[in-house]
Amino acid sequence: NHSCSPNATHAWWPANDGGGGGIHLAVRAVRDIDAGEEVTISYLDDLMAPFEERAEALRSRYLFEGAIRRPCDEWLSAVVCGEEEYEVRAPRIIACNQAADSSWRRAAAVTQGDDGGVSAEVKRMRMEAVLHYAQLLKLSSGCLHQDHRWVHNARVRTAMVMTSSKVPRSCANALPLWRASISAALRCYPPNWPSILPLLKGGCSAATVAGEPDLCKQWQAQMDAISKVL
Image 1: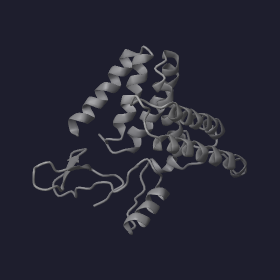
Image 2 (image 1 turned 90 degrees about the horizontal axis):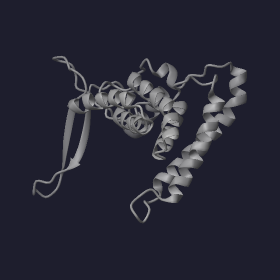
Image 3 (image 1 turned 90 degrees about the vertical axis):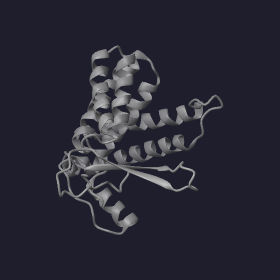
Image 4 (image 1 turned 135 degrees about the vertical axis):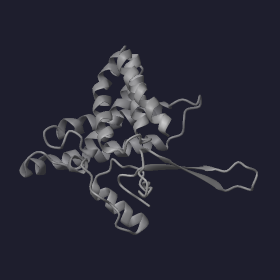
C-alpha cells in the first residue's frame, strides 16, 4: 500500500529470462521494519511535494484519500510574511516559477546534440530557467519559507546548471545551494531514499571542481551508505 512516509522503495525492470517478456518488481526496505509492521511504498513520484499536491495526485490518479501530513509539510508550502505583503509578491513569484518550470520542461523535451552531449538549445533554455529562478529566490526571500517547495526546486535546478559549467568559481557558488537542498531532502524524504542520491552526487561534483575534497568525501560517504541499503 501507499504511504507518504514509506518504509520501502520499489523498482520495475523488463524481464530478460527468455520467457516471452514481462517485468520484474523489486521492493527494498529503506529502514528497519518491525515484525508485523506493514510494508509500504510510495505511489507518487515526488515526496517533496506538499500535502495538498500529494492529496490531489492520489485522488486524481488512484481515486483514494491516502495523503498523510508529515513534519516537513509545515514548511513545504509555508508563507512567512504577512498576508498583505504576500498578496503583493505572490503574482510575481508565481509567474517566475511558472516561466522557469516551462523553460526547464522544454529543455528536458529537446533531444541531445549530434555528439550525444547537451545541445546549445538545451543550455539556452536551462539558462533561461535559471534567470527566472534567480528572480524567484530574490522575491521569495522573507516571504516563503527557506525550504518551500518552489524555493527548493529553484535551488536544485540552479545548482545543477552552475555545476554543469565545471568552472571552479561557479561550482563554489553552487555549494551553498547544494548544502541547503541536501539538508531539506534529508529532513523530508524517508531515510535512504533514492531521490537523495542525485543531490549528493551533484553536490559532490561541485565540491570536487571547487576544490573542497573533504566536503565531497562527506557526501560520497552518505551516497555509499544509501547505496548499500538499496
